[in-house]
Image (cartoon, rainbow, N blue to C red; front, side):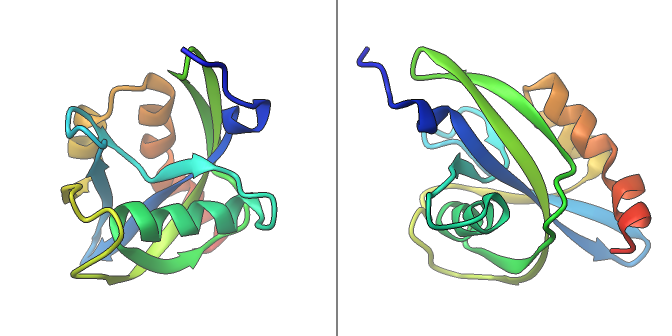
Length: 141
């Protein structure tokens, strides 16, 4: 496999969330081949901040619009392109779900935090999702 430029491995992601009554829900999307449940993420574009780049990925991959908060909740790594990608994770409070979007071949699912954690593969990302309620409270979100 051809090695990718180093900037490909520095990525940003968002945990899309909403409040549903007293509960907090996370929106997961499927990977391109629909084998795994993931959060929107991608390469940080050089003309955007990490948080803004993550919001752009949320729109492209999940048809999600909302308010992205600038403080990262954490980061995790995963293997791709024969190397290790590091994704800085932000939170995005969802205000709109589009009916049609760039990558609408992906499935979406609103899940409670325990159910989302069950579907996510990466352990560190599971920990970040588990920390979401405390992070939102600490940030006054």
